[in-house]
Image (cartoon, rainbow, N blue to C red; front, side):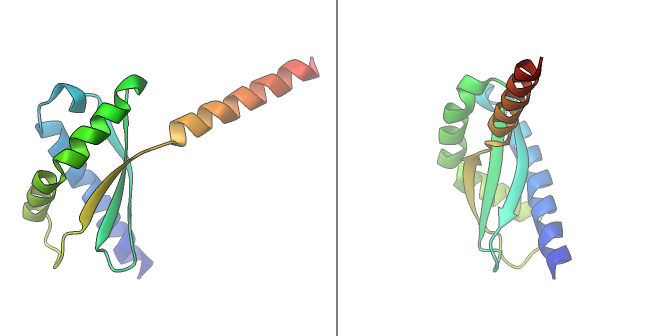
Length: 113
């Protein structure tokens, strides 16, 4: 069962990435989909996105959430599942968490010397 869920998540991530890439908007040019998480019944998909320019992430989220109906419609054409989930675009905080861990490790090494 978990394999099916993982396949659906990967398929959504791949297709959403392609859809965002083809939108041809300044804010979507440097955007990337890092992860997709669907709930138990595949009715809601959280799409974790990030932007290469850190200051553009909020603008990107507003844009994607404002166009999620259009994106979902395009997604439905590329998937052969019974039901296409509602899309919720959220900021991926993994990069920020990684930077914070690096900072802690570096400060620990400084204290050691």
